[in-house]
Image (tube, rainbow, N blue to C red; front, side):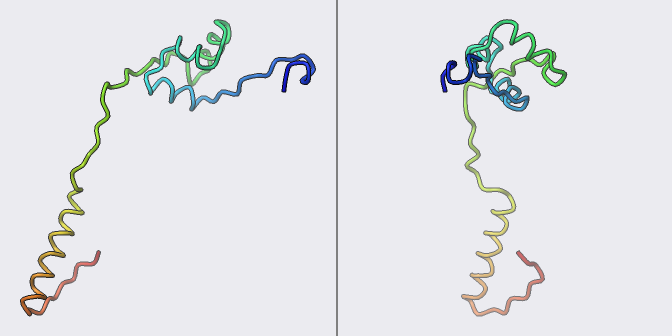
Length: 101
């Protein structure tokens, strides 16, 4: 919708506090946020005067993404139990266990 179709009023950008906090946590600085949402200096002042945004700073984003590719201890323990039970069943021993998964 153009400004003429909207009665001449410019469309307002919808921002959320959680969205701005996420931007800060993702490493965006105030100038980055200003450019991302096409905000004026006054808009930025008004935005960061909100009680939940006041004084908030950019958290530097790490230069890497760490992926945990090791199995969880619980999963590893469960796999170990299953392997032990399988070995006992194959060898013909009776298995009694009170553990449930």
